[in-house]
Image: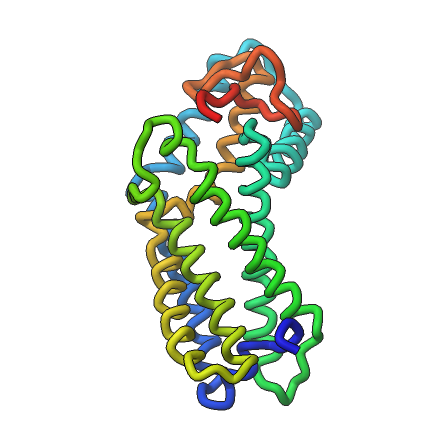
Length: 262
């Protein structure tokens, strides 16, 4: 069955599992190095801590450890897990589909590559099934966003074909996952083009993880910290230079103002 077959184990017939495992490790290193470069080059961490200190110095009151824990939990549940920063329900749903699909897709890929590298070690059917579900979730959320939701295109009257550097992450992600799913499908069906699509899949994946310093990939690590700082600044009565909250709380309790465009 295509949806219950580990596509990476099938590679062992012509490619050593060590090769693909080494490739995955290199991609992890690229993400870590790219994120550190982003922090140093753009000064993201320094900006965050400077803004944190300014907010605390302007605060009208102090908060205790218990309230800090409560704010951290709210940040995790609302801003991270529920993507509370998006007030537009369509954009939030597309983001959630892409985000959770990416998490499922990456985790199952790593487990199958390192835990079940060859057919000699049978892969639990749930893993490739989840891999397919995660990949399809990414495609659904990503293509929905790209073709129907992009706010800047609708609001500014730009051509849907207009591509900027900020689009590098979503486009490389969609290319990687789409090519990966096509490769897995052709490989399971014994299609002659499987090797070609595997090569394209590797190229797109390398672009995805190797372009962290120039894409929005690293933002996923900064956004929870920024959301937590914003909640703390509101709690102590200090307004940072971040957008103030709307008069009415956004859906799911997000502490962000209503968006300008829908």
